[in-house]
Image (cartoon, rainbow, N blue to C red; front, side, top):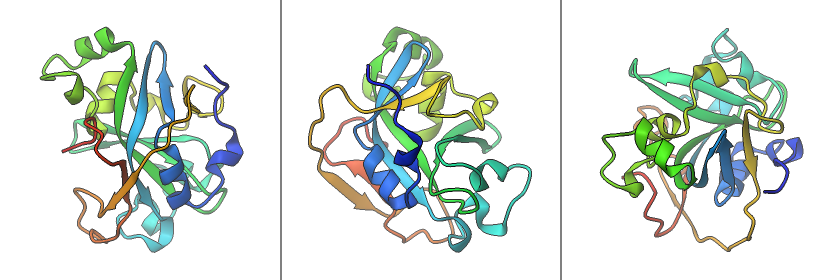
Length: 189
């Protein structure tokens, strides 16, 4: 596998990073998956973003250096993985919504015993963190040097990017900031 993507990859506007992440490979330990769905969050101008109200102990990582993980709990039970984008003081980020499982599939199945099939292992933000064993202890992890890393694919394949409004939010819900690989069967439903 190639080296992890460099910090410069993440030091761009969140929308650019969200689109560029499609087709890359998220790795944690012996598990990995091809990123097939993302959502951009635009920081202080985006009421759906956690950073909208400013820096708090919870959101501090969003205001820091790009290329770090922001992991948080929703509904008191699901952890979600975000990639910090842009740069220090500009809290844009990208939610990783779904991955196509590549390596460690038996381990993912053990972590997600209720999954009906391989398509259901990591086709949602809470599902993918469970399948890959990502928890809030990874909050702040540096994607440029493990334990979580993101890599360019071994073979660069062109992807057709589809765009839609984000899912499951109340504010700015009509903004077209959800990006996914069109026709991919691992995208969330």
